[in-house]
Image: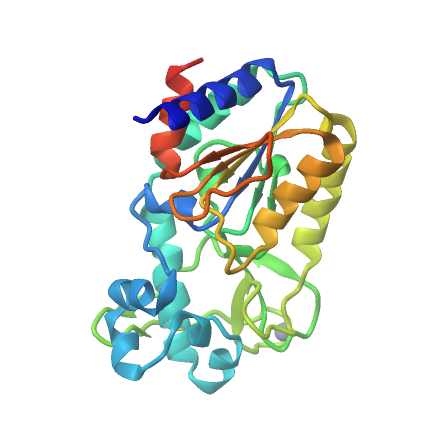
Length: 278
Ligand SMILES: [Zn+2]
């Protein structure tokens, strides 16, 4: 490990030791170390979902609510498969490292994630301390939508033909109007996403920040790229407003402003390296 990275890891470790609150901000790169597919670029998406390459459909094309009207079996093949994959995937050890860091802090931790996979909650983070800015694949809503209702997808098990990625089993419907149900995930060009659940999380997040924001807040950002910049912008804005230290962990885009920590590493590798210095 080169001297510059060592110094950055040391600096991150000091910020964690001296901090009194931990904000974890996460993008898709956080899941890669658990073995979840990386949808970055068409190649990444098609490697995980070969049938869509044959159809010439990219991730951005597929993550569009229009599919639920145009081809419900294909839409639910894609989301049903992901729902099952996330349920079956055990979060990597980095999640435990973060939870351990937060244990002794006066204000504990809060998670801000663009991931819809529910992995933070699955690894033991309190539900009340997570904000999912792009919604959750583990929750459903009406595709019309006929109301603002959001309900859990717990009992839903969509059987998927792995050759065509089309749903084989009965598709979920809205209990109110009988229209097709869809995940409460914010898609591209999505005018029908119901923000109620995320809005309630946002309120809890701003209540927490009102107490926890300050120079002793540490922001650990993991695998958040600039393609969908919500997570990076949130980290930067809170860091600059509160005087907090930002630790940005990203194997491709680790750039930070002067005085912060940028680690050109994968999430798990960096968390374990910092943890070893505590
Ligand atoms: Zn409905």
